[in-house]
Length: 483
Image (cartoon, rainbow, N blue to C red; front, side, top):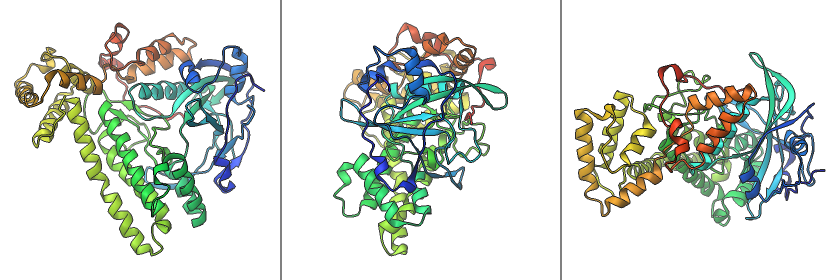
């Protein structure tokens, strides 16, 4: 037993067992703590002050099972790059659901904790680099104010995992509002048991959409609720230039949190066609495609819910299509309001969309850094860098100034911009350098970058060295999923 007292109350295992399998993590030979998220520990009400590193390592590697834990691997399916596949937690274990002091329920989830019945030939393990990547990317997203799973700890296992070369094995402890995915509903629907889908639907509403529990038609209400959450999430991704890289239906949560930081990246120079993921060969999940792909994924959720939308399948399809077709209008309005905020515009003007598109077009043509451009515009003076010294930008800047003049408060506009335009993002070349050093046993660059990312909207001396775009020799062209 461990001295860390989780307050487990495991509700997911009250669902039919066909949705999961009881299975324990596979023990590892020599676990060592690499990093523990002390801020998150406090938030969860977990006291580790009298706990040794050895105990933490055994706990967060899966070697030690906490009191009240009920480890399961969750079943789910997924459309992966458009093709349907039966999946499941092949190398992960839901240890339990912890009730924090704020009364919120959180999944405690181990990733890389050994083979499960859903492993499909995989080794069930994870490598240190990808687990540290998820740690730093998820914490960066949290600091940016974007809904996300979070990382509680990373441990090494004392074992190697065979990939292209032998790599250091590791386990990530992930915290999430839940791990219910669109793919979870697809899996339930694939089993051709409407009662199973109904059980999952009722559970999801109880866990994430309490305001919908008295809805006349819960399936329709959930579908609309998921659209609201996902349009919010994708709008925030677009705001900061985040590219998920693998938006399969098994990587989209019903809670509206960002999950599974595999080949993700932040965009440097603005271009809607930007792709980093090594496995996204047809640019399906390019930056500019993310809203469309979110809509496509939610259509797959709608298909899973059809029998619960209406007993008449034709009518159910008609209702679902009408709801799904509304996605683009909802997203377009949220995107426009978000871009207005990035330019300090509180009020609405019919010319705003053109003003925004003109800026993005100029940025694309001239390969202007997305983050730094908007942050520079957040200053009271016109940007002085060489890239802004051109007639086209001068003309745009004057139009923007004229538009700002229509706002009630110019000072309020600058504050709004600084609240929506980060001064720092988790740039790919800095992440890669930190991971390279961590793999060599030096965690200092990782810790320094992590510290700099904690307050991304504030200018402070610790971020200066992380703000510049990569030099040509530093550019990262591809990111990898780590499996």
